[in-house]
Amino acid sequence: MTEPEPHAPAQLSEALHRRLERIERLLEPAEPEEPQRPAWRSVTLGEQRWAVSVAILTAVGLQLALPTRLTIHPHWMLPTLELALLVALAVINPHKRVDQTSRLLRSMSLALVAVISLANGWSAVKLVRDLIHTSASPGALALLGTGGAVWATNILAFSLWYWEWDRGGPAARAQGVRSYPDFLFPQMQQEGIAEPGWEPSYPDYLYVAFTNACAFSPTDTMPLSVWAKLLMMTQSAVSLITVVLVVARAVGILQ
Image (cartoon, rainbow, N blue to C red; front, top):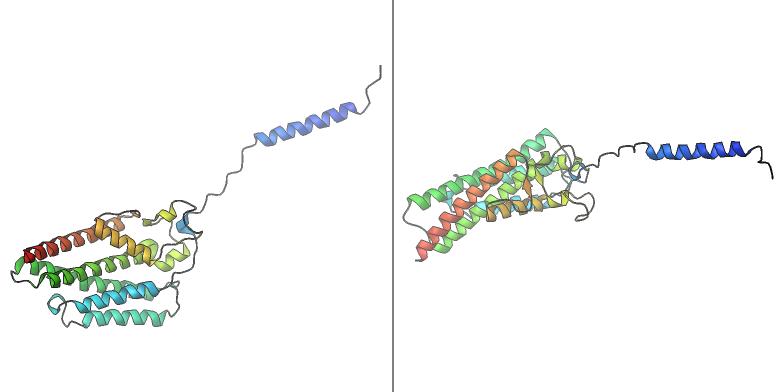
């Protein structure tokens, strides 16, 4: 019978030691993974300003097209102020993208939207008062055209508010500084349905305002903060009152 090699116990002990180390590594708790950065905290390029500029110019054109009895006198005062603020913003920040933050730019942008809302709110109140207290009305087509202009300007004004306030405005959204979103878009909830680094731009907020004015409730984009819910509720109320009164009077005229 052959005798075991003198170094066999040492090899056996080393193999057993390696096996024990492997088992210990398997039993060690896994290191916690770093939490995934939410979509609204991603840093992106600032969006281009052309879409917002077109929306503001459209709102100015609709206001100028309204009858003078529905506007603040003189008729051209508020539209001229809106154009002046738009030009001033372009001069102060001549870049094509909205990516700079300053108190002056922020104040002027909010003032511009406030003037548009003030002008359209005045027109909406005057229109509703005329429909309720005045027996004489323009033709059905003229009434529908006037009501449609007020309704469309209402959509543009609230879309600008959504765009300006969501997560601190366009520049703050591009920098990803806010911890929580005010509006939750579908592209922010699931990966793979939009390109990486997707960020809502003004057309997305315009869609939110349009669907809210038509359905009188949010559709695919949910408001999360209190101010977003209250603002959408106000827009729905204004849209509902305008549509119901204008359509009812127009039907009455046609009959």
